[in-house]
Image (cartoon, rainbow, N blue to C red; front, side, top):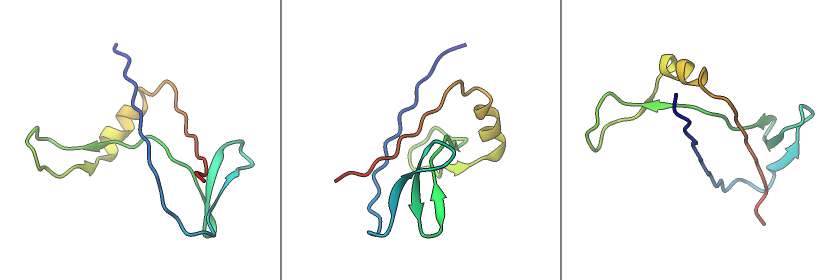
Length: 80
């Protein structure tokens, strides 16, 4: 088996009424409208190695890849 690390950084510009909170489950969450949001692993796939192809979500592949995840960390913070 090979160990692979995937780092994904996302910056969001959200309305002022959104906030970052500590959810009662003990995780950082984005309070967006009447929902609490966190971020997780999600795979996008294509069958081609050509430039300009469309990448799509594939539930089957996503389910298979999730089985290989040994750790996951999501940190959500407010950037001033």
